[in-house]
Image (cartoon, rainbow, N blue to C red; front, side, top):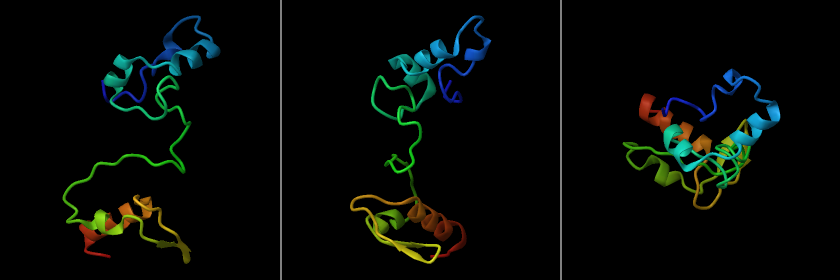
Length: 109
């Protein structure tokens, strides 16, 4: 069931379920729901996406075969639309991930 984005994808098909009840159910994922869906963001008890989004929050990524590209960019500054952006110690940015993808796919740095 990892293709499901949340354990209650079909809440609209439950007769008589109010919006309030649907929101309550979505904010209390069980351990089995988490296993079925295959992901969980936010503090336990807050629902599968307890933060509402992951904007401005660190998210885990899995990568392989980049020949050390991301490790070299951890904490590094980068430029976006001509502006210098300070890197975050111990982390990579989406801009770093993009740069490594370009390098791997097209040999661009």
